[in-house]
Structures are given as C-alpha cells and as structure tokens.
Length: 66
Image (tube, rainbow, N blue to C red):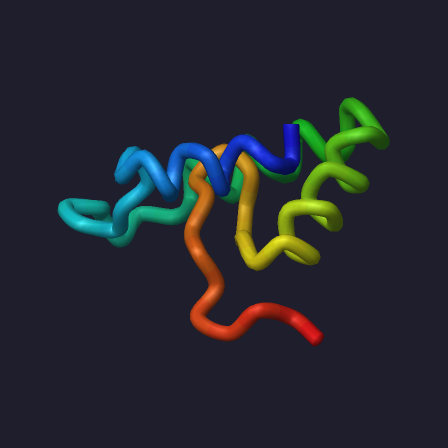
C-alpha cells in the first residue's frame, strides 16, 4: 500500500494543482484513523520514508527524508 503513491505519481494522478488550503478535514481523518488503528501510524511512517506526507491527501515531500 505504501508503494501506491509512487505508481499514482508516475501516472500523473497525484498533483498539487487546484488543491484547496483547507487541511482541517484531512487532518481530522488522519487523527481518527491513527487513533482507531495502529497500522495507520506505521503506514504513515512508511509513506514518509518513501517521500510522501499524509495518507488521505498524499503530497510529495520537497526533500526526501534522510
């Protein structure tokens, strides 16, 4: 599942064009998911290791983590 963003990005399906600035709904979904299922925390860690932030509103990190 953590590899899906790379596939979507390569296919041009993940862009930042036209995104709104309202992060609250996405932040709330993240918080509920993390509190409900410990696997979500690990999924977020894996995504960050691969250069992505979030999991329900994935965005490519400007600088990949070390």
